[in-house]
Amino acid sequence: MKTPAGKECKHYYEDFRRGSNVQECRLIEQNRESAPWQSNLCQNCPVPDILRANQANTLKLEATVVKTWFGFKQQVQVTGWCSNCFSDVPDPLKGCPTCSPKRPSIFDLPEKPNED
Image (cartoon, rainbow, N blue to C red; front, side):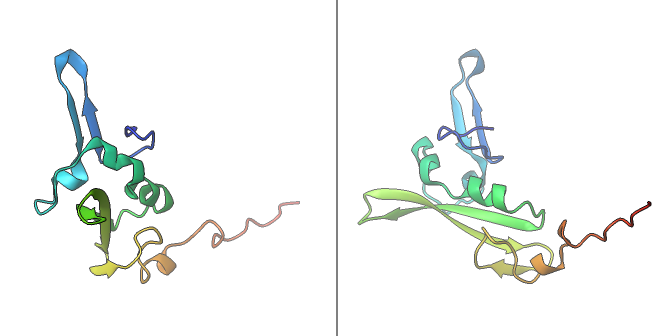
């Protein structure tokens, strides 16, 4: 679903039908230690970029709303872990450093022999 910032994110949910007014980030809602989510946080949220860059099903994300700039500004901080090797992922944008090299890419596929 598209966020208020116009990016596609699978964790964002909204429902404005039949008089309801629901907007939520389900990734932040899972984290009970996070500050409350607001729709303006979608402007600088790194989660849509991480999801677009890394399509690994084993990458699990956790998002937290943190206060910065002497408590006047809020932003989304994202951490990740790999459910395949159960290790922390230092940069979720790049993916798991131990499992990513194991995944085949399109360049690793064998070439088709010419049938001339």
